[in-house]
Every structure is written in C-alpha cells, then in structure tokens.
Image (cartoon, rainbow, N blue to C red; front, side, top):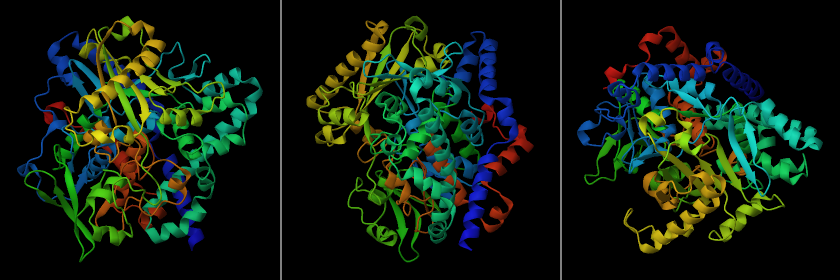
Length: 634
C-alpha cells in the first residue's frame, strides 16, 4: 500500500510539474509581451501626466497597501485570518480569495508587502527584498492568478551582452558575467576553464536532477503527517541524496579547481550560508532559478502587493496594516486555533475558523503560540530564536541605500547585479565569510550591489534625473543587539556611528571601486541594520531567509515545517514551508493554499488535479471577467 501511494504521489507530483502552466504561456513568451504592452502604453501617454499617474500609480486616491487597522474595517464572517503580508501570506490569501474565501491579512508594518515593499525617502524610492526574479514564465503565471491585472516584468541585461543578470567579482580576477541561458552559462565557464568541461557538465546535470527531485519533497507535505512519514523514504530518495549533502561535499566530488568552485557558488549570498554548511539543494535551486535570466517588476516590487490586494478585497476580505499580532488564540479543549489577538491599544481580537501564519516558524512557535499550544505540538521553544527541530534562524544583513543625483543613463549604470567576493587567492568563500564575521570593520567585506533604477524601465518617468543603488552585506544580530531597546529612528550616537562606519566601507570598497563614475553624485545615504529588519519585518533576530538552509532543514526537520500543523485550524506558510527568497515564499503560499482547500484528496490523486491547473483553466475560460479594472479598484 505504501509503495503504491509513494509511486502515485511521485507520478502526480511529476504531472503537476509538467502541467503547471497552460501550453499557451510558454508559447506566448509572456514577459516579452508584457514589456511590449508597457512600451505601448507609455508611447500612447505621450507625456500626459494624468495617464502616467494612473499608469504608475503615483497619485492614487487610495493606496490599498496602507489601509490601517480599525475594528470596524474587519470583515464579517471571515473564512481565514493571515498573519503577515509577505509574498507567502499574500499569495495564499489571493488564491483563497479566487476560490471565494473571505480572508483578512494583518500586517504589523505601516505598509503591506513584507519584503516586496518599497520605501520613499527624500525623493528616492528603494526596493527592500526583491532585487531580481528568475523563471519568470512560471512565477508571472502564478502571480497573474492572484492579481487584478497582469504584472509587467523587465529582463535584466541587454541583448548585446546576452542579458547578463549577475556579475561575480572574485578575488582579484576579472569580473565573470552570468548570461541568460544555460548554454551560455556553460559555454562561458568552459571557455574560462577548458580543462574542466566534464566537471561543469556534471555539475549542471546534478543541478537539474536535484531540482527535479525537489517536487515530491514539497508535494508530500500536503499528505497527512502519518502518511508523509511512510511515503517520504520512497518518494524522496533522490532528493535526500542531494539535500543531505553540503555544497562543499558535492563539489569535492567534481573538481579541485578552487576558482571554478567559487564561481559556481558566486550567488551563495542568495541563500545566506557558507558553501561548506549549505545544503546542495538550495545551491542547485538558486543556480537553476536564474539559468533562463532574471527579471524585475516594472514600477518596482511594490506593484506586486498593490495588485494582489484588490483581488482579496473583491472577495470580501481585507489587508490591514499597523496590525501587530500578539498571539494566536487557542482553545485547548478542542485543540483549535480560533483567531488572533492584536498588540494594539485595545488588544483587539479577530476570530476566524482558520489562522494562517506567514510570520515565519520562529515567530509562530517562539512568540505567537501559548505554552498549551506548544505542548500540543510537542515543542519547547523558550524564545523566538530557539532552533526549530534543530534548525537555527538564517543570516541577517546590513543594507546601504544610496540616492544619486543623475539618471541611470547619465551614470551608465547596468541593470545586472554585482557580487563582490574578496576571498583571496585561495578562493575559499567559507573562510572569507568567517573572517568577515570575526572582524567586520577591517576584514574584506562581501557585498551585493544592484541598481533598482537601472532595472525598472518606468523609473525615468517616475523619478527623472535620479538613480538609486542598494548595497547589501551580511551581518550578525549581536553586533547591534545592545541597541534593541532604543527607540527606532532615535537610537544612540553609538548606534549611528556603527552605521556610519559600515556606510563608509560599503561606499569606498563597493560603489566607488566598481562604479567610479558615481563618485560626486551621491546625494542620499541610509543604512539599515538587523534591528531595521526586527522593526519593519518583525523577524526575531533580523533574519532574512527564515530558518537556515542546512542539510538538516531539508532531510530531517519536517514535522513543524508543514503547511498544516497539528493544531486544528492552524496553518504555516512562506519560506519555512518551502525554500528561500521571493520564489520560496511564493511557493510556500501555493502549498498552504492547497492544504487549506483540502488538496490532495483521493479523487484529486486519481485524477491528477491540483489548484493551480484548475484556477488557470477557469481564468482561460473567462479571461474577460478575471482581471479587475483599474476603475473598479479605485
């Protein structure tokens, strides 16, 4: 029986992967059509301010991402309440709304969107968490299921440079560019390392195999917990093989060329763990995610939340900000989550038959649940940063937001990102990272440098004569922990001095070294620290990627990282249900929506049914009624 179920689920999982999108989406090349549509609209606007304001939402009469919580705004007869408006929470809520569910999303920040949100300051706009997105045909199609109109995406790089998305500045070596297309990726590496052709080919084969093996790993999380335990050894054998090894261990078996190894791991900052500690599955996932290139949302990442929220509202739900949740209300007699209590002045309570936490496993288990609820789960979590099933919170970051008083064209800024990895001639990224953590003020600093202004073709219409740069380096919460009790925005001079010292290093060793043409044009500098993350996205220690992505996370820690918890009516979503980053959070939302709606039933398994295919079919049958008009939103 177990073997039959295992084979069946594996077969269904593979079928879902192949049937994930309707054929038309791949054939139509949706992102290219979206860009053409954007260019057409701008051309038709012909400088008309009223049209441009409507197109880019510069002066919308109502900003749905800033609807503040009030008791009277809570919809009646809720089907679910979602804690957190990151992409996991919004994606899950949007899918439920498309199925007729009335959902309330509560966000503690003053703006919805989690790490998809942007902020404006002194005439500049900055992204905070979405810097580029890969596999756009898949993720644009998923987002289109939950938005009031299709989002538009711009491909990074240019046709002339092969649509470069990432550049790797490794030690003192010439910068190596990752061009779109797996053939280009492979050819460029073989040209650089002609004696390593076989190792490069084998690496790419393993990356593909590891990614394909991940599908059943996530799909069987939808099974009852007891059945998942029985099925997992059979259905995820190949996944366990790859996920159970570190990146370093896999590369040890491929090549001893340290420079090649470092280049292959050049994007390790996207999962925030040293190659010698990270699961090979997360390395394979990040690499494959960008093989076809990378895209950026036209109008900025805030457009994502701005166009999901109207769909939630159209189903009778709401997304309310300034609504920090204090605890999940738990009825111990029925072992059921019955709602939430807010941490506002009136300690408002919101009741719903389903509670979905998009606040992360650390917050959910370490902060929002009572001792009685934790006892039901068999967990003992003394504080939010306590490891969950032996897995610690992931890395945190320092952000340097830079405003420049010249356009991207004037400064000749590229849309591709730059990874600065000053690892020395031994090319040991793990040792480089360890040395930096031990001496952050003087040791070589790893950095990510990106220019949102150069990625967004609508930027020039919205912010003429200006550019922005976002530079990120890794950090430790402990460096700033002594200032946590200080009031945000009014912290001590000692805290400000730390930020200033990091800013000086980041500008000199990052921006001015690699983009010397920007010197003299810097008009604005602001630094965000792990405490900024604690304040704005409410992660316990400022972590950026949920729980860290070790082999243990993917091979043995399953019980409390499932969409459906052992508490009746309580679900988990976001990165911790799936994997790292924007795509991981989004897929966490997809998985949790399946779980909430009862997929997969026996009939679903037999018929190969799943939510995304059914919604896509419904949208394709009546496309004229699927997207809401801008007038209806206003």
